Image 1 (cartoon, rainbow, N blue to C red):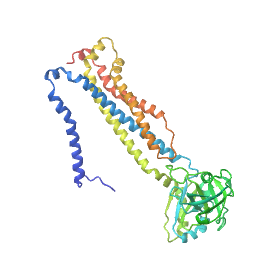
Image 2 (cartoon, rainbow, N blue to C red):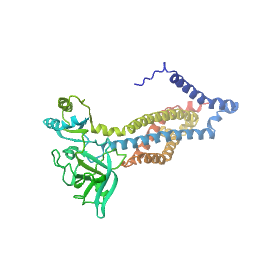
Image 3 (tube, helix red, strand yellow):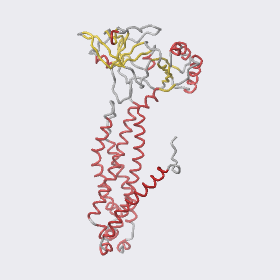
Image 4 (cartoon, rainbow, N blue to C red):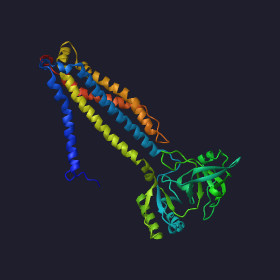
Length: 430
């Protein structure tokens, strides 16, 4: 574990102190150079506080602060929507309640029938299958040849998934046409293929894929298509669905995949461990759940979203803190004006509107400036995904209203104090 040991890490200690001192010095440079050059008479009259240049700079700072804050908040929400979308999207198969065990060698492979029969005695286990590769962890590809009207068509990079009995049933992959592999050792292991929709489209078969001739490079395992399954995602949703052929057998090491009911999970895992250990004493019980492994593909995005969320809180806090100081400054500048307005009949709501109107307009300006930028950045990030959540434009409205609400409450805190001052005291100010 990484420990934040400041005392024994000179670079970290001196760096932290140095950053603090540097920020302090830079923050003091502007007033240190600006104030000595001011006219004493103007300073005593307070003219420098209301100069157009100072007012313009304050507006730029407020607009910039809130533009950054709104940008970060909008991006955070859109990222969260996309991450939730990819983690809950229907992948074309059922990834939940699926426990996966590694089959490390041929000895463990040969014990699969015994292990499977014992495991199925537990009524908390629905189905069991095995395969060379696991969906979400990479599936190998090959050069495939498929029958067309003009001869055998060659296509490279077609995924090939080598499976055992009951694969479609266990994984919850729907069969569109044709049939599944028949169970039993050596049954349907020679020359039998199940294609997905993308493979049928790639080969130009359309809905007439059944019975089409297929073979690997060099004529290996020549056979025909016996079934077509609905497209399903074998990789993360950064990628689309690839053409795929499913073949029974032709593998010796891989993974055992066990479909659980979801009830009494810990007890069921203990039962599986006991059966596995008794039949494979020399192999460790190493398992994972497919949904967790699949979602790990988006781990970097989840971490990035969390960091962005923290950054958004910091940005909002700094913006509101600065706004509180500026609203107090503005209210102080207009103390005498407010006293005059109250003498002439202005009430508290009028004063609050007077002090908050300009700031609220600046926040609206910030929203207008930042929305195109945030839309462009979000769209560019979403282009990394083959499947994207629709942009929820109501988020812009929600963030805008939330920003206006927070700004109004912040300004209201200071405005109420100023608006409730006795006009006599206000008129005596300065």
